[in-house]
Image 1 (spheres, rainbow, N blue to C red):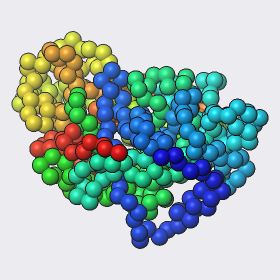
Image 2 (cartoon, one colour):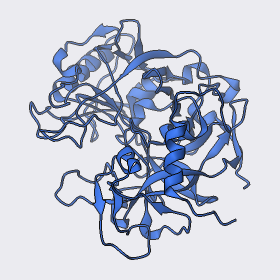
Image 3 (tube, rainbow, N blue to C red):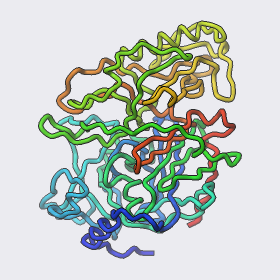
Image 4 (cartoon, one colour):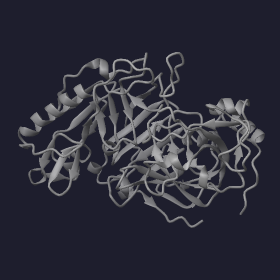
Length: 453
């Protein structure tokens, strides 16, 4: 069925009415998507439907500001550009205004708002940045039934959505079949914020990345739960909570103009290995309000947790010492890049929660709020013969930076797998479970029904 043409002024009015505080009524069920892991790139991929029911594969980028797709191959008669110098232009946060491009295609327009396609695998500020028009068009995802357990069998009714165009060259480094990126970050036009505004959903989303090579995890948008996984386990209970912190200096900041980061930070205050605190430079754990460096960031586009060099050295030395003692009694073997601490697989015992190795605890804003990293998340199997500690050295953090500085800790995808993460954007807090494997379930056990239309 052909979609009607969209009128931008009416959309503008609708959007701002939808952003009013009242959320007494919810329209339609929450949204859900499988999260597939691409084996060759280790990227996480979600599914959406543009010009429904056209299936679109998008990189899951937790900290990005918005969706962008390759518009060089985008075929739609219902899209509309966003005019420059309007309130909607200001609301979206356009970078500039595209002028005098008169070809009839989504990547061209006259006096239209442009955004930047954010590909984390292409260098920023390279002097060759590309900008592309912002669009309004129809968008849908699978829906969650009222039991919290089954996605589908049909997609949501198509709704108007703001996203950015991109170009074929912006796909460089992305997994095969992926045509853009899905941003869930702190932005007025990220997926959870737009969906909340349109459907009056609660401003929540949740991620459960799968550690399985063949079965997907799940992303949920617009629901506080329940989230029913295998054995009917509701992963919303119990969760530990810690504040989501704002980094005041984002990647598009300049020395004379600071723009807050769209990425999610949490306040790790100390790290323990096998229950013993690791001596760290505490200043590295805080966000520097001057240049935005330091602190702890969550990322779905970094495969393994990255630690600033001094933190990495302290943690790995503590881990090797603890692993060498009883009851582990492990001796290191030749490391395999990019890791520096590895063990013969034949010497490592395994349980339901993964390899039996010293636990690594990330202590949050209170001593009893702890993200416990067990063997399934701390260790990576490399081939048939070796287990390696799945943390990498991120280098020495620069003391100053012209643009936003680097975080001291980036919690990567492997450390999030089979951990349930709930992002409460109303109270700005993160709910986390630590590994759900110990509860007899996994992120791969969410039951998706086949999409039928």
